[in-house]
Length: 75
Image 1 (cartoon, rainbow, N blue to C red):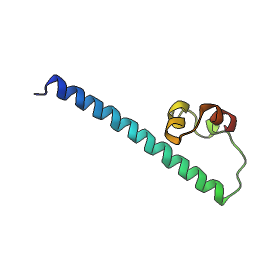
Image 2 (tube, rainbow, N blue to C red):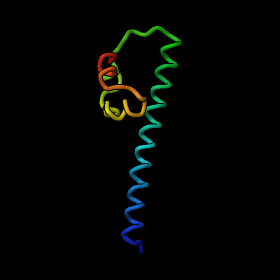
Image 3 (cartoon, one colour):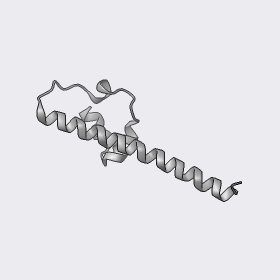
């Protein structure tokens, strides 16, 4: 049986693990996108249309170290 402290720690670790998985997914998609951009010249399709709702903009900006205003200007 877990104590309250152990339960809180487990919840914290689970939350942190979810955040790390999201960050890894965002970085993986960004790397694939940039690799594809360097191989071919693509018609510029806004990010929101290519992968709508995959991750919140705020989360992507935090992981990529970007500003939301720059993201919206680029997208």
